[in-house]
Image 1 (cartoon, one colour):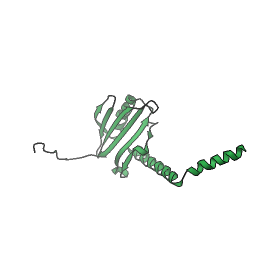
Image 2 (cartoon, one colour; image 1 turned 90 degrees about the vertical axis):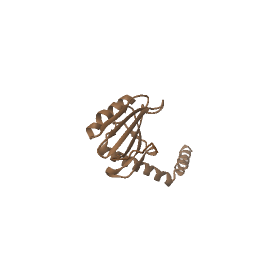
Image 3 (cartoon, one colour; image 1 turned 60 degrees about the horizontal axis):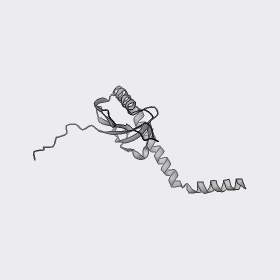
Image 4 (cartoon, one colour; image 1 turned 30 degrees about the horizontal axis):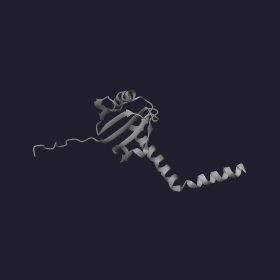
Length: 149
């Protein structure tokens, strides 16, 4: 009787999983792999960083991508800030601005892009720090609007 109940429960639970849900999981996995590939080649991340694919958006591919990546880490926010400030210059990113507070913001540039990092404390049940990375093409020779008009 116990085996029959277990089998029935298994069938009911597995019957609730649709191929749409499996397709969504596959897409999320593909999204995470795409993000990881971009970072592996260009931008180091803390060893334990976990990318949140449902809160991240990548536009473009290869060296011409832009987007917003949200990730979490077990590093304290100040430790995470120090990691990025130490590691990114090794990968041709120049730190141009840094603010360390409850919300720490680091701004980097390289020859073609800008990167803004926002680092905050995680919640009581979350990782120690939450990190939002925004990557965009570097704007060159942009005209400044005339405020006198």
